[in-house]
Length: 90
Image (tube, rainbow, N blue to C red):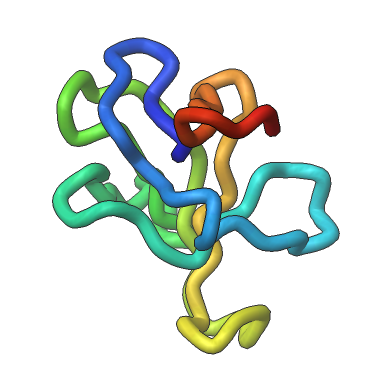
C-alpha cells in the first residue's frame, strides 16, 4: 500500500497503480475518505491532499480514458511511501 509520507494515512492500494507514461506515480482509485479534492484557483485541475494532515499529494485528472475507472491520481513521489505486504519484498 502507499501511505502519506507526512502522517502515514493509507492512500492507495498497489493494485490501483498504473503506468500513465508521465513519469509520476499514477493511481486510478484511492481508499475511501483518504483524500480531499480541491479545485485549483484557475479551475483547470483538481488538487489532491491527504484528508488527515492536508499534505499536497498531486492532482486528479478525469476523462483521459487511461483506465476503466477513467481517473488518474497523478501523485508527487516524494509525498507518498510504499509499505510492502508482510512477508513480501517489493
